[in-house]
Image (cartoon, rainbow, N blue to C red):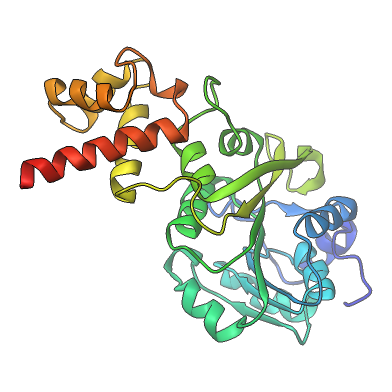
Length: 292
């Protein structure tokens, strides 16, 4: 299958029909059928002969085929075991290892050490819409030794990941991602380039992992607790939102916000990552004072 264009709708349909494969709605299976977009994804990820690639959900293997041709080694993680026989024919490359497990249950740091040691490791995927956020948060929270993430996601999700303060898309995940990476929407992808066709358009987002987090804080867990608390009720002020969602005394919080030079009447959606960092650090100091 090396020279066959897997992204051809006819090839895909013929092969899948021959194995009696049925698309799974519950797994969010939508396979890419556009060679230009596949090449643009691989170009965006800057895959070369020193690249070790982790692909989440290879599906039929249209993107995988290109990754294998351009990269040094590919580790593909697929939850759907009904694709095992299909993959034997569609992606029979020497430089690929396919693991048929749930990505969310895999020790990826161990996998990188065992399979991709010494390579420039990147994560590339056409992610299922239903589990996009948990996958991205797992990648960032587990702090893999990777340089870049390039993933196809629902367009609205890409806009949230890339959002800036004072926009409706700005949310806790915007801050979580931008704490660890520079973000860029590489391209908008119409729903017409998938089989079966999803109801919404997609986007490819590029996350370039920072060598160290964008800001330095006293307690990372406190930072993300404050961020989540601030967006729990978007229409509330930062004072009321944190107090309510984190069960934090308002009188103490007023002191914290004053020390952090934050207007208690402002909303979380108007605050930058640096401002959340100041609130977090003052709350950490306050907690230490109480303990001591």
